[in-house]
Image 1 (tube, protein in one colour):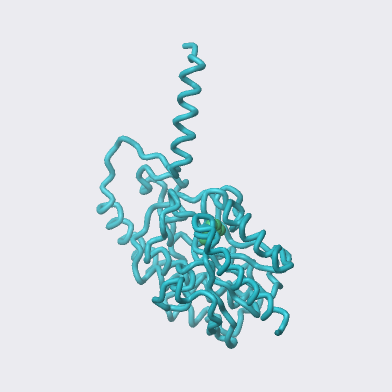
Image 2 (cartoon, helix red, strand yellow):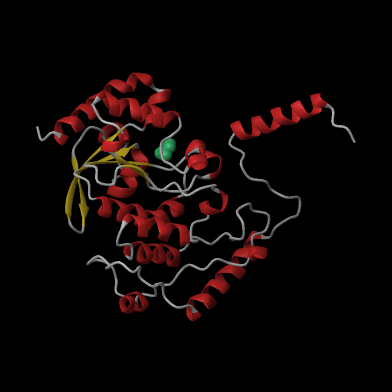
Length: 302
Ligand code: URA
C-alpha cells in the first residue's frame, strides 16, 4: 500500500518529539515479570559464580595495588556473567539482562577495576562488565576524551545523548561550553583529560541511581589513579559528592581547593559548576570563571 507523504512527515515529527524528550528505548506490549526475571537471574549468577574461573589479569604487569590471580580468587573475583538473550524481556540492548544491583556486583566492579594496569585495560574491563544496567540502554561506552598524559583531569556525572552517540564525554552543548572555558584559560582538549563517574548514558538523561553510581565508582577511581593528574576538577556536585564523599552543596563547595586521596598520594581537587547548570544560569559563569582562573594559576605553579 502506498504511504501518504503527510502521514510519513507526521510520523517523523512524532519520532523527533520522542527523541527530543529523551525517549530512547522501546517497550513491547507483552507484560514482563521483572521480579521473577531478576530472581531467576540472581540464582543463575550465584550458580555461575560458583562454577566460573576468575578473570585473568591482562598480559601487562599488574600495578602494585592489583590483586594477584590467587588473591582475586580468594576475594571472590569473577566476571559478572552475562545472561542468555531470552532473559532480557523487551529491553533493547542485545542479549544482556537487567541485574539486581547488589553488594556482590559492587564488589565485582571493585575487584575488576583493580586488575586494570592501564587505561586500555580499564576500557576493556568496562567493555566486558555486565553489572550495570545502564549498559543495556546506552548505545556506546563513553570512556574518556583528551590527553591521558595531561596534568588536568575533569570528571563529570554521566553522558547525555550526544555523548552516547559519539562515545565521547562532553561533546554536546555542555561540552562546547567546557571547551570555551578551557580556551579562555589558554587550554584545550590536548591539555586536559575528561571522563565521567558513570560511563553509560542513563535513559532519558535521568540522574543515575545511587546503586548505578556505586557500581561505576571503582572504575572512575581507578581511571583517576591511572591518569594521576596534578589537578582534578569535579564538574558539578554529583561527581564531587561521589568521589569525595562530601554532602555539601555545590554552592558551598565550589572554588575551594581540597585533596583527593589515592593509593599513590594526594591530588589537588576543586569543584566547580557543571557546564549544563551554567547554560541554565549564565549569571553564575562569573563564579566558574573565578574557579578556572584559580585552576590556571595552580597549573602554572603560582
Ligand atoms: N554531562 C556530563 O556530566 N557528562 C557529559 O559527558 C556530558 C554532559
